[in-house]
Length: 397
Ligand code: AMP
Image 1 (cartoon, rainbow, N blue to C red):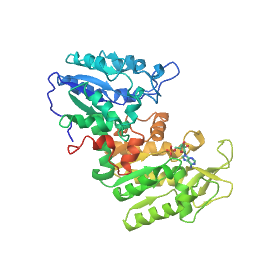
Image 2 (cartoon, protein in one colour):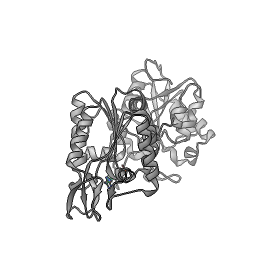
Image 3 (cartoon, rainbow, N blue to C red):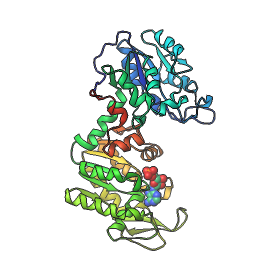
Image 4 (cartoon, protein in one colour):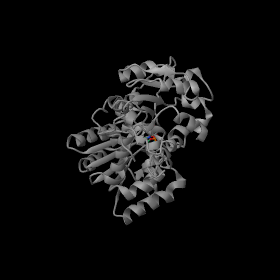
């Protein structure tokens, strides 16, 4: 794959597929700038090396043209974040669009209209991709968050630039983070998986158990595993149809000499309502009528030790119902331990919506080694798949 390194772009026009699918409130104001911040490095690289930028992105899930989802709505925030003027063009294909990009001067940036105003984008239409390719001289994919989709601007357009297709700076960082988790990270590598359901992370578990040294399973996911080992889990969350898979994963871990670590004690309640009774149980002896909603004090200590004795850590998913103060303690302690580990030189990678939400809630996100910007794209990568948008950038394709 071609990385952006020392290329001199000599007034070349770079088509950059970015992910500007930012959250907007009802006044169409951007409520989180993370994704805009994330495009800065590639845009600056292109400009510093003498090129100009043609930004392609989607926003939301429009069915045809929809002014509410026009990228014009975010022109101001994009320009402000990049600290550079940005031109807007109200279409992303066609003769006039091509004229507009042809006129771009070195150092200029143009933001094209929402790709998904055309159904051909999500349909992966070749003709549409070819029309997009006419906008510039080279193609850079920097939209990790959509690389798992076989869309025209991610998986198809690259073939029109067999020699001039590049991995953007953000995409490069995401791929490096994934490879540190699943291949090349300094050992021992620990994955901490939490969240509500085993089902959404089943394929990740099957893949990561082969790749990492240890997996902590917390949150609602843990109870299916505890039940698979014969534990009594009261009214805690369980996916009965996955008990056999849980047994199989535990068996694979044993065969490969890997460790799966489950909570020893848990904090339970009779209700999600935090005013209800709260009690600590051994995780395999939860009373009937009680549901485990957070990890208990012994487990907090044990997880802390595991975190501090690892060299690379990937965290995805809260270990309790972190939205409620009464069940936030476990997730808070994970954050604190990770932060301490980071100061000791441990590589800490965080990904997946709810872990980031938890970090933000606890006001602790700036110290992390790397926070992934991808949801589905990250999860599919950790399942061991090569994403279509990444595959398209391989030189043999
Ligand atoms: P996910 O989207 O799969 O990462 O799941 C995140 C959700 O899992 C959060 O809303 C948490 O409240 C929830 N969760 C974490 N631990 C538990 C638990 N022990 N029981 C039920 N839900 C949980």
